[in-house]
Structure formats: structure tokens, C-alpha cells
Image (tube, rainbow, N blue to C red; front, side, top):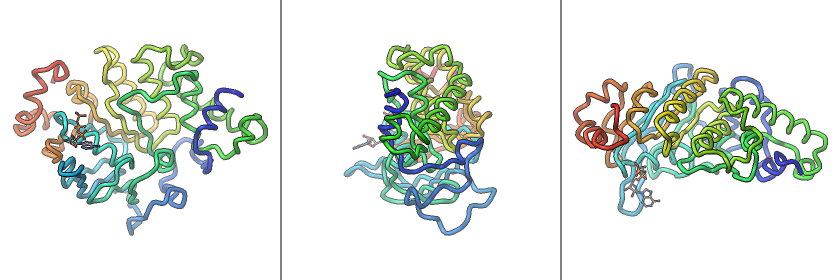
Length: 308
Ligand SMILES: Nc1ncnc2c1ncn2[C@@H]1O[C@H](COP(=O)(O)OP(=O)(O)OP(=O)(O)O)[C@@H](O)[C@H]1O
């Protein structure tokens, strides 16, 4: 069985959306496929791509998020920063449908959604990477990236195993799209290597490629530069910016390296004890006394805060 078929066979192959093979994604998610609920009005052109309204989330007695409002415009690179325990991971898990908030709503293009099974997230036009690498280490780089398109495959498992009919065409399309993304992210030289044998920084870039291959409307990056060297971080920042420019993808990222965040983001939301204490441009955030007291004054004393 070809490795790509193996990867595709492990994924949800129940829904196929041929339009996503073309550049640009449909402006309305496939609500019937994912069980999302229209918010009551059709999104207008000026609406943010992502809106969080009054989000609250607690774990037992611990308030992780309190009354969070966030509005992310199409094509924006938006960072979420804050001290340890501030609520960053909780927020990205709410946006990506892993957690259902106790209060409030998440709207994508004006359409509300709640808890979404991970394999359904792609149908909303949302892709994410993970803080800890989540690649198929025993598969090639090419097959890993092609697996980012598995949710579109409509052929059945037998077709994939035998490589016949519609399945063969879908596989060819997926591998061809994966090859293009690898070229874009300067990974062609390692396309046939097993993902698990690559240096850590390259594996993080392969994860970015897998998330990008479906040209998501919203790309969520969970600490994309964690564990990287300074030069790898700056390279990754360039690729994230290039991806936004090329695919008009909106990016929301969590990142501890404040120096990288300041250089990469259009706007930055700062969390502290589950509350948003600032939401502004990098320059404004850098000079915000509340942010300095809660975070930057501390962050600049450690390695991650260098260069703010
Ligand atoms: N699954 C969970 N169960 C119980 N408490 C949790 C859970 N996840 C998060 N918390 C708590 O919610 C608060 C916010 O945590 P969260 O991980 O979202 O913060 P963070 O800003 O991502 O922190 P870090 O930078 O250390 O990753 C913390 O007090 C944390 O202990």
C-alpha cells in the first residue's frame, strides 16, 4: 500500500470539497458537514474573520479565561502572549474547538461554532499546528504533508488500498499539492526523508507545511518557534509571513519569544490571569505599562524576552 494511502486511510474521508483544491476557499463553511450554527446574520464584507465574544472557561475552581473579546481581521497575523498560566493554550483550544467555553461564542466569518472534533476542523477552513510535534514520524515528509488533505478524500478505504479509480486521482492531486507547498517552504530537498529523522527545526516547518497544504482561512500556530535556535526562529517567522502573503491566510499564534512576536505580528493580545489586558500594535504593547508590569518586565529578564 502506498504510504500516502496509508496516511489517508487513517483520516476521516467522509466529506469531499472539490472547491478547496482551487486557490482560495469558499467564504461560507459547509455547515451541514460540521454541525455549526449560523449566528443569525450573513457575514458582511467588513466582518472580522474570527471573533470571540465574552469567552469564559473554568477548570473546577480555576478561571482559565474570563470575558475574552477578540476580533481578528482577514489576513492579519495576531499573536496571543502572556505569562505562564495566563490562558493562552486554553484560548487556542477554544478557537480550535477542542474546548467548549462555559460562556460566550466563537464566530468564524460570522458563523458560530462550538466544540468541533479535530478531524472536522479542516472543514471549517481552520488548520493548526501543535506545541509538541504531531507528525507521522515513520512516514515521508511528502506523505505527512499530503495527509493534511486527507479530510477532502471521498474514495473509500478499499479504493485507497488498491489505488484504483477516484482514489488514484485524489492521491495524485494530494501529492502534487503537497509537493508545491514543500517547494514554497524550501523543503523539497527532504521530501522523501522520514519525518522523524529530520532535525527538530525542520520538523516544525514540515508541520507548518501540513497545516498550510489545504490553504486554510485560519491558521493556528501553537508555539511554532519553541525549542528552535535564533536563526531557525527568524527563518520560521519569514515563512509564516510569506504564507500569509501568498495564501491570504489569517494567522493566530501563541509564542513565548516576545522578540519574534513583536517583529512578526500586526497586533498582539496580552492575557494575564485569564483576562485580556491589552490588544494593540507591537509598539503600543511594548509601551503599555500594564503589560510591562505583568509580563514584559519579567520576560525581558529571561532568554525568551531578549530583543523586545
Ligand atoms: N486541563 C486543565 N485542567 C485544569 N486546569 C487547567 C487545565 N488547562 C489549563 N488549566 C489551568 O488554566 C489556567 C490557564 O492555563 P493555560 O495552559 O491556558 O495557560 P498558558 O498561558 O497557556 O500557560 P503556559 O504558557 O504555561 O502554557 C492555569 O491556571 C492552568 O493551570
